[in-house]
Image (cartoon, rainbow, N blue to C red):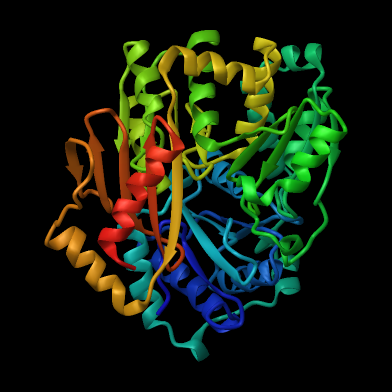
Length: 471
């Protein structure tokens, strides 16, 4: 059964991610558009650099063309935020990106975007799943790719890339970056974020070198996620060759990781806090901030100091984008590496985030480590730890019943301030620390996050939760 989670449909290549299922998804989209009487506008299709992504994108386009729906197709791999931007900018009904984002190389998948370039909500994906289930494989109309191109059903508009880049440039202070002229080492992790960010950085007169920019279906034997453990080569090169900054983005260009010139990894929580503070304090923007349940509470402290509010939402970027729109927040993001800024798109964009981060360090004339030390002195120390647990299929129901149905609570070593069951099980403590346990929406994992004033204390909270769950 094809199911769409928080990051779209993801499946193992050769197992469930096969041509038959891919064209069934495409046919489901056609049925959905016909049902909604929204077949008069084209669908933007992009794809990352995973194995089968370009072929899968063509198969999808053939189905859409066969159903009389025009397609805007990228001639080269494109990051997810570019497709989201195109849907928003050109007021399309739908867009599709073939990607499994930061999942292991064995996976691929499809993301669906709706009007305004938003992640498809549960109501849309639930109906799509129903329609896919009704598809008869031998009755799917197809128009061969080359024929569809000749008939104008598939087009390759140059404005998709140009408009995306120009929009980001219009939101940056390019002059401050040009004046500083930082030297940057960029690691796109063999993904689709290479070209647009390189254009931005070159336009800003940065000196940029690349590593891991070639297409590699195995991502160099690593995960295409910009976490600290996957960036040892970037760390070593930044330090040894004395770069001002190292930048990494994930396989489809929607998550970001930063390396300071001293080799220090700047995680997503720190990036969020620094950019929110920079935009509010240095740029003069006003407004709240949005984070999900598993993201640092330091954002709350920063927001309070500005007389603003930090809004907490469930995991899944559609919740962040919805709350950002509702409250006119400055930015919103999550600890897994994704963020978006007011006025841009309603989804994660590492391209804009990376360029804005470069602007920030150029404007304040401090390294990320120096800037972070100032913020910790002002707001206190927050340390987050994450543990991912694999579980047996038979354990999932037991864990869910224990935490979400029976609502049993572990015995912790300090006073509890509150409980939250909105998305998983979260425990708030009186000293502003927390621990949350939830099932991943994209992988068979149980994720446990904890934040406290020390890493040791955060690990103690995770240990208590793990012992209670008994996986």
